[in-house]
Length: 266
Image (cartoon, rainbow, N blue to C red):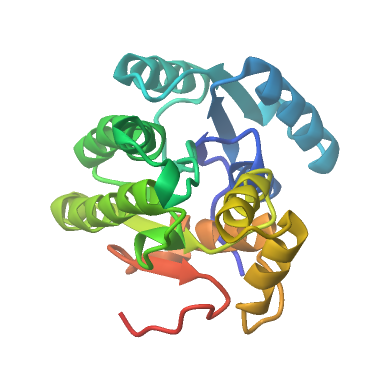
């Protein structure tokens, strides 16, 4: 299927690792130009080396900018840097930030604030800037990689789940607000996925249930009817479709990718 992403400028937050990195590799393979944003320049440089080795001829189509997107000025500087490198952003993929999973007895007020800063505001600070520019141009696509914890409450993921639920509402609301201006906004909710972040979640579950991390992972896997957890590349494939012209009438959608671990119709 031709996705018509060649030469498109794709800005990916959280692009140095995990799902964001998998998205970067997939967009580069389609011929897109990719701007990666992450807090660590060291991690970004390592990602560029890996991407260059994985996707032949992609080095000149990769731009890097280190920024803390919890700071709105950091988001503004990152966007300006990306535009200076490759021009207007055609596609925004938000995948930066993760709220720490915490057993309920370890929660305090700061944990709730930290979760919103780490997940909600890192997305909204960039989303708000980009969607307005896309609306002024009359075109653009945004995909927010959120998380299934925003639909199904988990005792170890309440602050992060609350941030995810808020992001789902923002995604749907922005789709309605900017659809008349030619901008599509969608969200993808991965379940447990084999990324660097998975281990911290298993550690929190293990502490809460007083089991080993290995058993926590085994329990999480047993809950999935497909019999395995997702790979980052599988999530990236869905992100690419939603960002592409092949999804031209898909907007305001929140798509759960948890292998039917929680069967639901809403």
